[in-house]
Amino acid sequence: MVGQRPAVTRLPSVPARSSRPVAVVLLSGGIDSATALAVAQRDGFDCYALSFDYGQRHRVELEAAAAVARSLTATEHRIAHIDLRALGGSALTDDIEVPKDRTVGEMNADIPVTYVPARNTIFLSFALGWAEVLGAADIFIGVNAVDYSGYPDCRPEYVQAFETMANLATKLGVEGTRTRIHAPLIELTKTQIIELGTELGVDYGLTFSCYDPLPDTGRPCGHCDSCMIRAAGFQAAGVPDPTAGRC
Image (cartoon, rainbow, N blue to C red):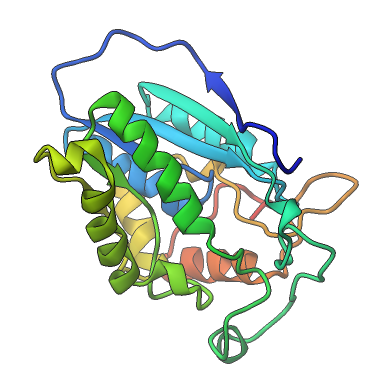
């Protein structure tokens, strides 16, 4: 509800901190964020994963996020609770129909109603706050500017602008520790992301991508933009989607 302090779920307890550099990784439970976590692990970071229960209709993705965090041995996984239904304005948080069975041209024609106003700005702000608490200078986000349904907060210029702001707005930045926002997938196609994640050992069978899960079973609809982009990515990569009936 509006005015309430955001709650935080901590899953599970944290092992002792290692000598590796620390990074906060935004983790939704989908293909891109799972791959971003694997990249951060590959690059030698001690990864703290952060997910959001923000009132999304597809909150089943949080179960996927927890499974991915365990599979990729994140040091800690937290779920922050912020109810963006109080603002609405998106098919993911409001009583607005999710588009189905659209062509690639239709997906790229305009910003779709599945865009959640300022979502990545909100998520990155939480990640920035946790990074300060952890003394971390690195944040990973799995945004993509190629197969991304036209969201304005998935573009390189947005990521760069947020990084500039982060270094003006934080105690760490003022004291000389530069925050870096890593978007390692931003110029990759969905197919390339799947190929990269497969090389890094990501278990895509744990991930979930659907925007509009079936209300009776929670299974993917198979027809929203996200389901269709996922299916096309696996097909082009020549890799079977291990979810076998889930998207």
